[in-house]
Image (tube, rainbow, N blue to C red; front, side):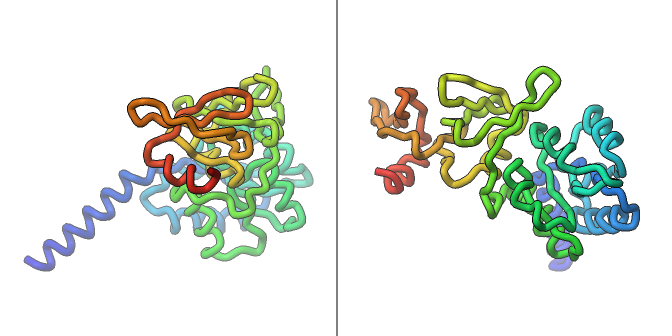
Length: 255
């Protein structure tokens, strides 16, 4: 009987873990088939049942076509693709809803990659542990260690526009998308969710509500309204709700 319950408990733990962790659709963009197969083998081993699909493209053109026609959660991207630059693809994919992890021997380009909004940079040669660390960040919502992102790419009439993060005052969740509220009163729609942007943006942005990220330096004061409602007033006069569970932390940190 004891063995049965232990087995049953183990099955339930695995079952509910798979429910909580969304099954992932991944694209590998790598021009060397030997390395691509190694990445694929390790990724399948690491993710197990949480992997929905894993595809492989060895050219920028093939990768772009696949991205345009398929739903993805993650792209694993090399920066040198048969002489083409992976940055030509990166400037497009960072505007999409999925995360991007770079796997490249060009370590000197890591800072630039993070500035464009990648979740991680895995230098070649790499081992299983380093790839697993990167993949875990997708599901655990771990923030980018460097917080070096300087741009948010948005789609503008079949082209990309890079929005400097210094121009972003606050971010509002809009379902699976987000709305970027910028200095000067402009607003842009971004394809990444609030949770994904929270992972990428620096600590200068704080989650003050389930639907809002704000730039801390733009906060002017906290206003307490009747009914125990809390609002953050920005320097431009905009008022944004503060979640009750966030209020004490925010007040302790900045006021």
